[in-house]
Amino acid sequence: MKFPPLKFENYERRAKYFVYKTEHGGVHIKFKMKNFMDSRVPKLSGGILGEQYVLDNLHFHCYSDHMIYGKSYPVEAHFVHYRRSLGSMRIAKSSKISDAIAVVSIMYEVYNTMSPKIALFEAIQKCHSNCCLPTEAQFRLRDILPSYLRSYYIYRNFDNMNKIWIVMTVPGILSYWQYSQLINLLGSTNNPTQELATKYASYIINGCVLNPVKPNTSPTCTKVKKKSTIYTQSQPSNYNTWYYGAQMYPMVQPLPNNNIEDNKIENFDDNNGTS
Image 1: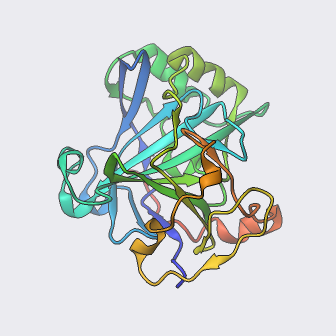
Image 2: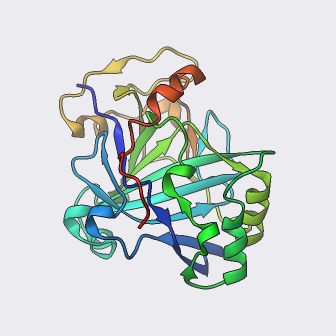
């Protein structure tokens, strides 16, 4: 069985509203998806997800909560979604339903390059409260996603089974200016590292689930009969050095750059426009 690509629908919409507050020892920014008509709200579907998920908020961490290839990143963003059938994030948080919440996690590299979204964090710094971003600081959600979206990990916490994590292995890009502005706002807001004693991850590339294997060894493809099968793989004993937040080793390198352009558009809804 091969899973379809993840579909990011209405990610062409522009994020306007945010919540700016102190939380967990640092400043916490959440871009809230509100004032969207139901047909326009950003949604996530496809992959192993059994139904549509509605984007509730986007927030950033400095530094990353996860490591890929044993490497940490300066910034990580979490796109937090809830099951559309549940109706709200409040209900999803209290729900006992498996995978009531889906979090897409994206790492970011920092490069010395100009960015059209320079005004984003600068505008937040001036506001220091809940407000609507000025037009020049608004950004399309799609613009901060990486180019290639078919290579990712999935895992669930045994202590929080209503949440599924989708960790993209290809990072996005921020400019040094954006990064410096974000650091000024957030400081260090990554979660404490915890041992990965009750969690394990499956790696998916191009819809194919790969068996967990040691780094630098050849992976094999699992033919998944049921979606739940991916959660029944036992965690290898030699993975006791993994940590939450943590050491995730992709078993396959991302596709070369010449293949990225051929794949990056098909994951998105073609509708254009702003909310």
